[in-house]
Image 1 (cartoon, rainbow over the protein chains, first blue to last red):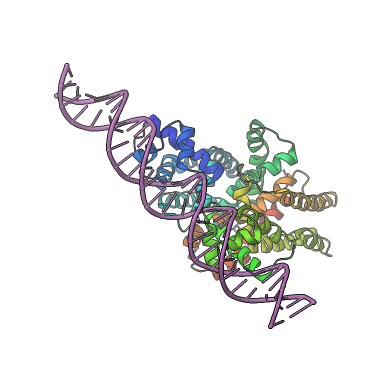
Image 2: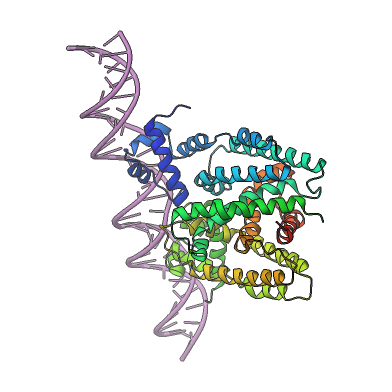
Length: 206
Length: 206
DNA sequence: GTTTAATTTAAACAAACGTTTAATTTTGTA
DNA sequence: TACAAAATTAAACGTTTGTTTAAATTAAAC
């Protein structure tokens, strides 16, 4: 997939607007105007609005697994590697949060004709990686054997996204008033909270 | 707010379709057809599509706090009350999951003119209730003093919703193939996982 | 410099959108 | 039965939707 500058410009504007207003809430004319191109360019380059979203998904599907794998094989204690993995994971989903929001909302939409196979394959790959790591830790006697491994992911990602989806509520509650402090909060408060939660869960007996 | 049978019928169809296809992805004609009424009835009863959503929010905003309060004041250990609270909370959000999905996706939509004040007020009330309970537990020496109380909610709700939003993925992974087993999974696997996670977090030192 | 291909444009397309209208039917009241 | 109010209907309203067309412009190839 080779994309020229204009195509990338359109994709990034579309990502922003899809995340803000939803796929159906965003018109191709709105995308075109914001990206400063003619409406017809979207059909010309991508074929259709749905294919534009499909291209966007592929464009954003960079490989989480390879980097996560290198984090997990560093020479550190199991708990330190959990910390490192979660720090890396939150950084990743935070910078890709718009794409995730689009996926969350379109994934369960039956009327949409979008190919989620690549997304699901990557998700499964990522799961297998974590599963093996946790099982290693269990064999080493560091992690509890009663933890429900498939549900670790929803707890990590879910905590982040529930925070993100209720951003205004938390901003009001904490008095955060701009984007910088939202970013700061994610790294300085939310990430440690998730790290602590997962470490607690993985070492909790009965 | 007094609603007749036909109005309730429209509201429940709308809730289902909004959750499935989004607010913008659902047409008033689709709602009317599914609810077996004429399109004009929606304007006639609710004024507009947006006001229909507003009415739906009020219709679903039943009081979580009162029931949660009675759970938290039962004569049980702190950890057992955590279990009871989470079991109750998951039951509630599971049965209201469609409404929550709509709210999550419309809440961050700036172009929408919907009143979220009631929703936010309730959210704050619920938070205050939990905050007081956790602080009591900390004073009693049962709960860790380093836990970030405002982030307990995102972990509970987020775990549920990330599971729900990736339902098909988990169904494929666990071989769940119908709605009954999805319900079963929520109560028999997901709820215990969240209970364990929060108890672990609340008793985790350092 | 000429020709061919790629890009960009404004305009038009039919379909679908939320909403309103005005007429008709049903219901409730006296 | 007669009347008024409420409910229901099909049709029409003006916009907006995604997409296509055909002409104009720019870029690349020879």
